[in-house]
Image (cartoon, rainbow, N blue to C red; front, side, top):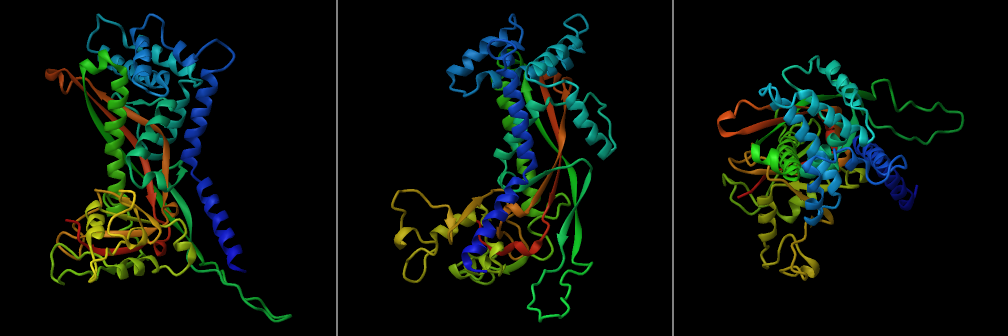
Length: 433
């Protein structure tokens, strides 16, 4: 097979892998269903706006959001309105003479229906989680509405470095078995009438467990935010909680934290130490040289190990790479035409033609030196993220009673699996300070 055919086969394989992002497809389906319900022919205008009572003062915030330049102010205010109803229902329990909790729940349900969703549908999704993990929704817990969950999952992807690059699958159980190639398939030249050797015995494939773990994000809100501005309510919840969950996800995939077999510990990875210019006993690690980077990139011999490849490293490591020069004062990581500075004034985020992703959560305490860090090269689409749809949240209106604040906690279930360690190149001992 000639090179063009091989490249086309790799391109098609990569497209197939990108199609496997089931969570992204689910988010798209939820959003499509929501948009269809909002702008359908059954009633004039935006049904999502009609789902907020006309006498509700929050409707005025749609105009405020529009003036702020928010692209879909009705969606932003609507999501915030749903959160406000849920929080108000919890807080109403401590005020028996005020609006009963059931009224707030009915308002939230009315908004969900206006967006095209049966309020009971989210509980059907969460029932899968309960069956998988053997836990109930007690303790004041509630389930997040599907359109709100879809937006929250999108925010988590934007907050994490690796999440948006991995392949996502939907899980309906706590553990999902994934087939893994245990031996290479070979092709043979066979003489006429000869027996074709079976290159794929029964032991050629094994299975790996994609196990969902609990991730939690916690945000503290003041009563002023709850009562005055649902725009900030959504932004506060989404930004704080999504960022917190995204950081934990990156810690797990990069540093193998919380009993996750991540890039730093997966069996079969190609691990080498930085040679660099620093002294061998330097406790801060060495600055990688060009030889180190090229060697790491070609540790996996097959072309597929470099297709869609990306570098992942700590920002301090990349800073040191950019400032490192050879004996002729030329930068090791050269810009266009080997110039000392980029011609357009911007620092390039690529090495050897492959993109560079920076994450401050990558450990600076690896085993080579006291404070050194690691560099990873791989195709992130080969890493699997398993999502259990049906996110849960809990509200504590009492713990910060003296400061008139409320805590909101969001729980999600996510599994991370690196199926084949041989696609991961791990360069250790890089200086990050």
